[in-house]
Image 1 (cartoon, rainbow, N blue to C red):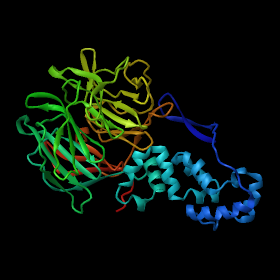
Image 2: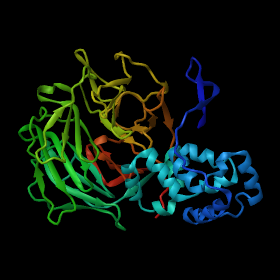
Image 3: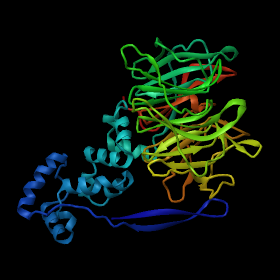
Image 4: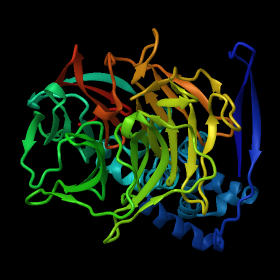
Length: 486
């Protein structure tokens, strides 16, 4: 197997001066099975074309195909073997390239079942399952969806207006997506009053509107907390600041239950109470919490994991030899299955605190996970990636794209920089490079991480326009990463 990789060469002013083409060869050990004789081959190929829904018309004539068999052993393999054992192992970009080789491969790569296998192998079964819930995904097709999510050619901003109301008005709430529903919990009301109510916005309805959900046993009111989705329709709430101060409690809510009820999880060895921390979920069952602000304004640099799939969950601090500087208002994003990426925040530097644009990663599939510095200000092993890095920020938005890329925008940015500018980083690259993504449409003036959620893996919803200190939750800005087909 081989691949032609085009690598940019940068000049002193960070502009691209040359492109170099590198041919990469990879040894592959594939069990392709026995190659049957030509007589049996023709009957087998006919049945396989039906199975793969590939039309033989205009692909390769029988005479040409027979000649090719004598020249290329690949032509002796069945369509099924080529699709299942070879093409399905490639990336979406590689499949698009293979389709331009000849008419036969072009017809093979038009198959939707093949594209689904390619996406599942490249992005993981969980991402594929989520993408299948996107309205209109079947009509869009896996081939087109893979192309648009790889190239981001269809990405665009649009503004939505929804009905209903979230009353009383508030800020510093937390929002999360459950399928195609947006859930909002808590927040800071008038005179710093902590709220503990729950609202839902169903995007599947013809005219979406905010609805108050009567939930039994609500947690104490809070703001500066995190709300995450686990196990399909379950929400997990952690931490924040309430009437009695900082919190470190954990609550679960099954949104699809007949009588939704918040249930407190009694967990052993909890982390310190905190607010403005960051959290994410792993494998649909594990909650990861990092950093934040503890009592007396002390910034934290710890990382904890809670497995919610066991009957009596126990918090476990992930032991590492070195940790990034303490911080709050940063983001944790899962990519590549079990890897997490930390970006930005208000970080401690000696006695001072600065907005950060540092990037750190950790692979939780390793026996002894450790933080690795992708780029940082004077951090151990730090190296500045190519391209133009986003300005330092906190309380921003970070979206994990299929394939491992991270999209960053919004937050609190100093100076005249536009917080709505989109930046992309692929941490899986040998030399990670920040890239600017220019998207048509009108972006929001503000985009905060706690008020943004990702729906169906293809839409980032920014809740509320801000007028002074008032949040207009009837106004939503949507960043669509793929074409909307309804």
